[in-house]
Length: 636
Image (cartoon, rainbow, N blue to C red; front, side, top):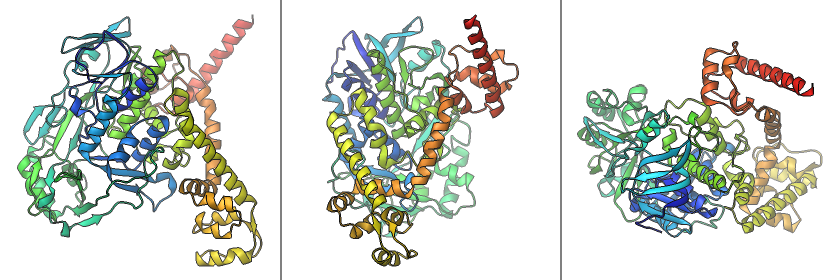
């Protein structure tokens, strides 16, 4: 509900209406906490400031995990999607990743409706000027409209707005996003409380007019049909699906763009913040990969009722006239009309070694940080942090146990552990390669991994858990049948020959047939007489889980064994105020990093960048000796 005069107290305050703020405020309010969302403008809530797309490689995993825990991003993406693709299908299932292209305005409007109609959630248009703290404990905030509001917890989701500065060529202007002012005062307030900050940079490409593109010179990119939803609560996608288009830069494009390098804020040093290495600007790609004569450019319409096209792959802060000339050198864009130039934006962030795994700050009790303020890049990374910060803020209010996801639980757990333990000298982006147990953390099994956790905290209904339990029973029954069902060479060989697989000479189980590279679970349906099992295998979500569990059974078992072995290091706790200066044999860097991050376990300590295996051995020995001495003293 939108209000103008807030109450004097809320259990949870969320600052910022981006993807992190949406998840944090919805989670806290749905868990029963009185929640206030503060946004500069209500109509900017849920705005897709860069690409109007959700998901992608590894990012799609995050969206499905958010959904399995009870978050909202997947539902909004399903409701407003105009194209859906499952990426990396030519590779193994660990890296399959869903992605949607969305109607930009529709996505934002849908998000706003969900926020404004949520019980226990109030919204004001304002910004925070000061964070009020008493004896290292959050007490409330003061706003620019002179409201002083008390709270038990706060989730700060400021995005790219903290002292935001936008660059195009030699021009710059204050702002956290096109057409919107920066947030002033929050950085200064946090610095005064003892936090350290830094500067990062992100960027966005130009937008062009669809009517001015010669689509006959591009490669059409159609949606998957049928499309696979993000949310486990979406039965099917019924939206009209539209294509995207692929074209390429060329040597001529590169020469044109190079003309503007001497006026590029990135190359001339005017931009101090570090940009995302894995999503570089087009000028950075040309500079770093000079040997390449072309780069992909995806032309992505921003919705049904607009002629605006997002030029994916052309993120830039070059002068406007150089951008325009460069675009017109690309096939299909010879007569293009540029509607808005690309730009880079610099903003303040707070290195996340200052956080606990709950995303609560170590310095101020009750203050949580989520999203790009923690040095991440992307809607999905922000939404995942917002959800977990909102959950943990509510759990703190309710004096319940925090929700901390392990690296073996979810990509969300990997992300937060990485942020805290590794230096953030560039915007953090999620990749499947970051997860040691990625075969277990697939996008298709997020419900099986996380939905019961979502139910325990109150964000997933009992009805959904009953449905999940039935699904698990059906998977188990189908696998048991396939492992026990014996078939003869006479039955199996016609299928094996058809799929170019080696035939069998003796009776074998259906499970071993399915493990063959070219055989799918659907292939063996014709060999099954049990009508119930045939019916179960005809259900895509059962079929897929059965096939993956059987084909990768050995690998999955090994990863589970690794998790069990490493669990003991996570359980080996380090005293909260342990003095690392006592251990003279620790390396200098190891001692500094351990003191700064203050890991909660030997397992966490082993993942800190700059802490060596030797440091871990020394620390373990010292802790064991200290524990032994303490035990001996207590027995006297």
